[in-house]
Length: 175
Image (cartoon, rainbow, N blue to C red; front, side):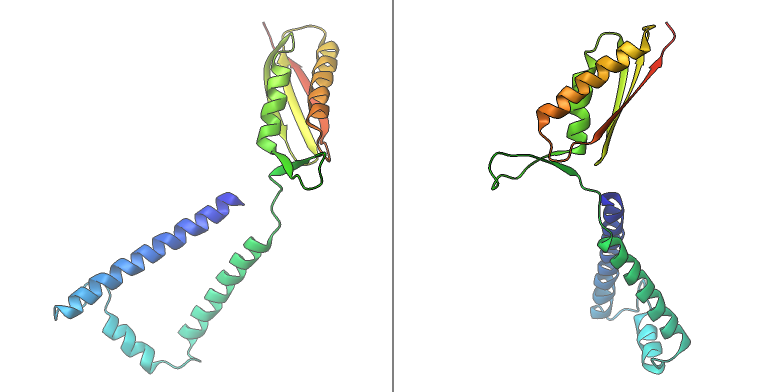
């Protein structure tokens, strides 16, 4: 959702900069007693004074603005995925948490040193942490058990309020 917010903000900023630039250019041209340069605003003003509120173009523009406004409102009111996982603290006044990216990085560092593991990918979500590992070892079950034990030990050491469920997948790589 952050990406969508940034795109909305960028588009709005570009629109404001464009409108301000056109406004400044037109004011300078009007003060210099010149014709409109980029926007024939006297014609737009004349059209607006001749057009009633019930005219089709005004109604269509109003409906379009209402739809865009509602879409923006829905986008902002949609709950976001929590970026932080709360950590149990000894003091109730303490608010401690770890980000999902921080949790993934911590788990990746913990399981990278396991013997036989050549490549590790960790994805941490609110309710699940997935570890995908590649190995050249022939005993995949032993590697999976070691990875699971190491990752679970790391999760337990973090003292998360609601620790995610751990899932480990190990695949064999060709030598």
